[in-house]
Amino acid sequence: MRTRDLNGRIDDLSEKLEDTTLGSIVRLDSNSFSEAEKLAFSKVGEIVEKYRQTGSEDALVENTDLISKNLEIIFRRVTELYCYVVPMVLGCGGSQEIVEYFFKLHFYNFEADLNECLANVRKWSEKDRARAQEYREHFGLHTVD
Image 1 (tube, rainbow, N blue to C red):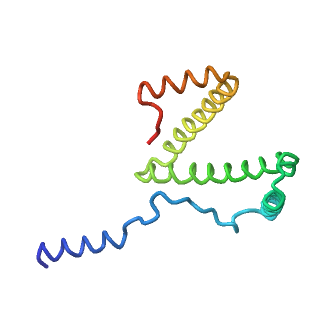
Image 2 (cartoon, rainbow, N blue to C red; image 1 turned 135 degrees about the vertical axis):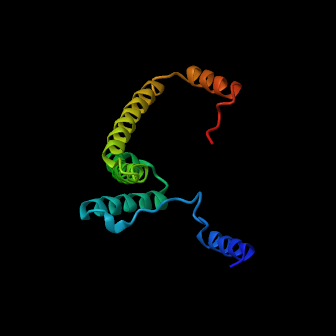
Image 3 (cartoon, rainbow, N blue to C red; image 1 turned 180 degrees about the horizontal axis):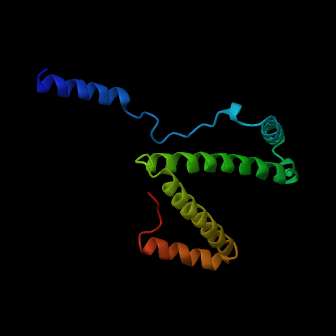
């Protein structure tokens, strides 16, 4: 086979394997949730529908705990998936256990640091928030790409 033909086949394969989902939202399979979790999602769906029909935020406020629980379920599942996949990919060279150990150590430390930081940010006054925004914009830190 000629080099030109081989390059053409490689280009064809590259086009077929191109990731067309880049930038799209990852979807979780609803079958992966327990019946209790599905019930919680269903109840929140009813609450949201009631809000859409009435426009009253009372239903949302009354059910903040249930809505937060659903967000917690989704966050936990995404975190579990991430913490499963990343060490598996990074450790495919034979050091799976070591990679998993260090990944989880750093990931959960990052999560704890972030939670502490956000708890402090929640205490900021509007003046402090504005000053932080000005600082970020001044130094080109206002976007995260």
